[in-house]
Amino acid sequence: MKNHAVRMGWVFLAFWMLAGCACVTPPTSPDGLSGGRPGYVIGYLKPEQLPSSRTFLPPPPAAGSAALAADEEIYKMTRKLRDTPRWALAAKDADLTFPNAAATFSCALGIPISQEETPHLNMLIRRVRADASRANDKAKDLYKRKRPYVAHGDTSCTPKEKHKDDSYPSGHSSIGWAWALVLAEIAPDRADTIFARARFRRQPRRLRGALEERHRGRAHRRGLDGEPSAPGPGLQGAARTGAQGG
Image (cartoon, one colour):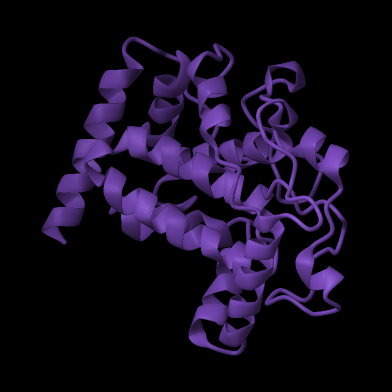
């Protein structure tokens, strides 16, 4: 309990130092930040400021290639985990809705992430989620890759998930890595644990038969680094948003 209090105090102080003389309190309520879908909020970046994954990602593995054969082998191995605790955890990690997704990195970060306990940090990851997801849109529309479990006539560990042919690049993977990169800058002493959680979290995409392991959230982080419309000067401002008052 003492360690938790110390960490909360350290994070709060660090973020106020980053805040400098800023006097505008970033919003913590989704009111006014609607992203057009129930439960979703807008990101920090304008459409023209989003990194386009189609400009720096290679195409998905071609038919008959060694890369595709490797993907197929991974897919077959993950089927053996069906109905195991790991399968169940993969289904849980697949849920990107809030408040369910808020606690994904709580243990790794060492503090709770929720609307009630850390409202600014909670809103930070909600908005980063929107930007990281939208950065994938052009590449998804370009490649229209069929989900492997669909190609195999199989089901995933999230059978109610959409079956649209847009599995590459992985939105779940890029969102997870964007979260990790931002949180690691907020708490660099926890970076190893945060990245380990991100690596573990991306594995469910394999369990669900998505197999896109090539996309990361670094481009989105770079977007925040130079984006004045984010809550403060670039990523440090975004970090500030995460802890002002929580």
